[in-house]
Amino acid sequence: MKRFAIAAISLLSVTLPAFAADKMATLDPKVPCSIEYPKASLMNEEKGTVVLGLKLSPEGKVLESKVNKSSGFKNLDKAAEKSITKCKFVSPGGDQWQTLEYVWKLD
Image (tube, rainbow, N blue to C red; front, side):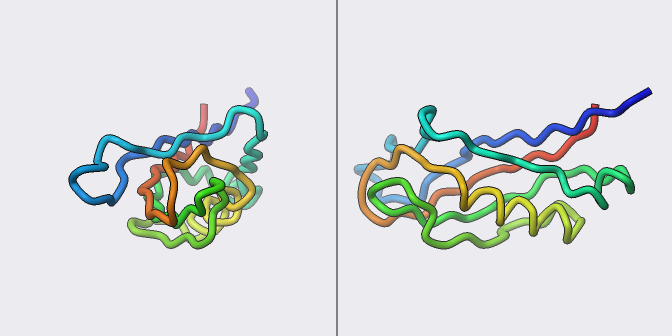
């Protein structure tokens, strides 16, 4: 039986002043967001959730990323950080930090 690997992205929150708290970035549907499960993690059946902090430009490009909470596996954390830099977001404007949850699971 073959296992399928899935990585799911969801934005959790945005750190903004109170007057702008309802503004959150979303993934740009026009730009493909390639997510590749690390081969070693697949072989070891590693799964988990990594929480990333992302600094986005007004154009939606990832300027910086950091692991706020580890998945428990370095390979998954590194792959999430690397993959997310290829994604583009529709940003509410200004250089802003977003919190993103990256879920690695095997089905």
